[in-house]
Image 1 (spheres, rainbow, N blue to C red):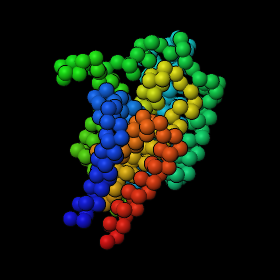
Image 2: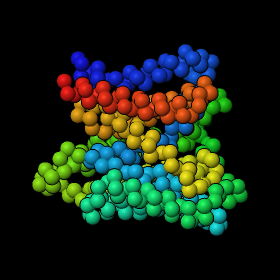
Image 3: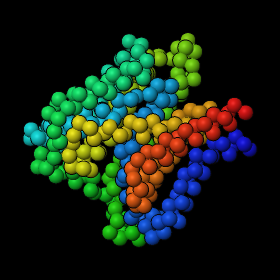
Image 4: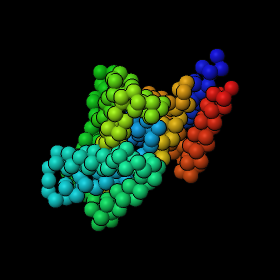
Length: 319
């Protein structure tokens, strides 16, 4: 009974946060328009957090996802600036994400550098590369194709559900697609089971015939790809790209995964649990913004919530 309550604690916390804002913001928070807005606001974080879950399943993590997101957006924007079509810029941005993810994987899986050290180093390298490629400037205006920026403003009409003039944003649909794909890979395939085996005991997995290096390399490539997708989504939403716009994604993504980990029996990352963490962060951000609370208060609350959730989960396991 106590174990079940502990595992449900984070979900109960989410429901209490929703209830708090529903009471404090009775006319705006639980409206269809605001909930759709929340889904779009959290879409980029959801994509990065799902991608981060892939490496954290193995006991690793990637500090460079924010820099990868910025780099992918900048690469695409520079190609747009040079007159290349949208598909070329998007493909190049995604390709860069995979490439730098592979670099992270090589440093960790082949060279043997600790993930914290390796990705801390590549965080600064990829950030510097984004500054170099963009000249340190924000690329916006006529340099960003209308077709690219319009994607984030479009969506599926909800008239059939009685929600006239409202649309389910394409960005939200991208996040749902990534969530479903990562869930399928991690929970329903032998690839995912091998990743969990590595996270449980990498040495035992190796002795059992699991190709640990190859799988870790692939997992970091997946995370790099996910970060690049989020970077392109962000660039589309703000119709611009700059070398720092993805900086805030890394800490929030790690926080979301850790919040989700408190829901598991063994403290393992699971993508659906990660989504609960994303929702907590996104709803907090939305509600506090509507209440005109300063951003630093939000940061303090997020840190407090993560520490409290993880501490409660750890204490529950020790008993």
